[in-house]
Amino acid sequence: MVNGKIITVDKTFSVAEAVAIRKGRILAVGRNEDMLKFKGDSTKTIDLIGHAVIPGLIEGHAHPIQASQSEYFEKIPDLHTIKDLLEWIGNEAKIKKDGEWIIHPKFFITRLKDMRQLTKRELDSVAPHHPVFLDGSYGGMINTKALELSGMTKLKHAGILRNERTGEATGVIRGSAFGLLAINKKEKLSEQQQLEALRNLFLLYNKVGITSVCSGGGPVEELKIFEKLMNKGELTVRVFQNILLPFDRKSSLPEMREALKRFGYKTGDGNEWVSVGALKVIVDGGVLTGTAYLREGWGKKAKEVYGITDPNYRGELFFSKVELIRVITVADELGWKFTAHVTGGGGVDTLLAAYEVVNHSSPIGKKRFSIIHGNFYTPEAIKKMVAMGIYADMQPALYYKDTDMLNEVLGKDRIRTFHPYHSMMEAGIMINGGSDHMVKLDPNASINPYNPFLAMGSVISRKTDRGTVFNGEEAISREQALKMYTINNAYASFEEDLKGSIETGKFADLVVLSANILTCPVDQIKEIESVLTMVNGRTVFDSGLLRRRKKMQGHNELRPPMDRGGQVGETQRTQRDTSNLAMRANSHVLI
Image 1 (tube, one colour):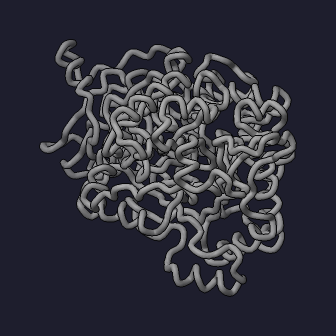
Image 2 (cartoon, one colour):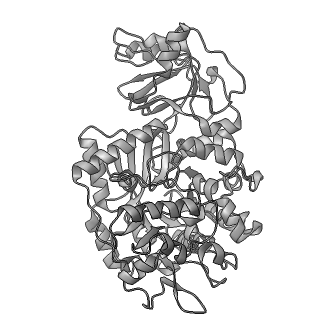
């Protein structure tokens, strides 16, 4: 690749003109004339025509298997208002037979413009003869027919919310009541269908520049699916697979140790394509359903949005501090990185308190333990994370999509601690960027959006999708945002020597951009696209733009691109001495 702006993301954030690749690895980075010394009879040369190149983007937290299958049989609607939702349900009721379930597999009422709780009466009005279930992972909404068919109308259960005056079920349910729903088992995909769906999703990931992903958490069977795709030679994204706790948290310490030993894996097992990630637990609920475990009650305004009648209700806590200590201790002893889903500040404090106890007897500073989501970080929590070297696996999509709603419910004082990127980075916390992509295939309309440029644009500008800026002082630089999706995520999976920057010896995972992320207008960052994506030196997505531009312009391959200013670093700060390498290189080089 020549005539470009190679944004290396090395320690000095240097920018070069060209990069040479051989056998899936970076051979050298530097000036055009130095890279062209590698040219031989079989060399393929890509003229970048001044385009910027960045390391392959690493998605720090997603659920690709679930997401890939979510629209396999039917497309999930893109809904923006309660009116949209009710119209969709009404149309489904016309198509489906009476008594047949109408289900939205990942629905959050808080994402709608109305920002209010739906009522059971509204659902009944459009689907009186069909059971309706709006699944929000840790909470949801059902109608009267669903209550009746599931025998939940008068059932006393903590997960079935009731009107405080009449005792009638409101239709709002917690995740603990999901198992009561009389839903027929979904049609299962064959192995071939699963692999096809996953391959297609990864090609969509490639299209937005993603070359690696941390799969958020699942059983070992999910690891096997990735391995099967790899063995077929169809894997275009490297996978670091977190494993959900494979034993009962109430087991004794000896029982936990034996169970994890029998499991037969530990973090890092695998190869450069598919490897075992962290051991993961679910500590609390979610901010989108009002079940995240907060430091204080959700408050009076939560009734209108979430249907929470008790203002002192703090959310759901699934693991106590003592239970966490036991699980973390065993994971640490047996060579696992540990992580946990936590979405509320109270959950963050509980996990950090457990980490502190384990750290006291077995220092965890270099083990890269982390918090997934977290969301609400106080100065005290940040200080503890820095002291123990705890990483923050964060999802800018949650800031982008949900801050306006949370500000309405929680108020400006509590929202000051929501996604404080600048404060965390300045303190020295390693932040890993991801999306928590779960459902739908579109990079911008999915739940949650997995377009990394949309995410980077939001943390740089602090703008939400409604155009609001919250706590502008928590904005971070373009370089910091890019590191979140490259080298920081490589550190999170112990692969910083293999990927995350464009340096000699690392994987040739690269992305050619439609605009320079370091110099384009801030509001255009979210609109950046991949022109070409490469994994292991192989092109996995090509828009054809470079070929079209070269054909139109008659571009001179050796002419250096015009420097438009505002670059970080200079070519002379990159690798200069390439003559010896050139003599050793064979002709099978990509430049």
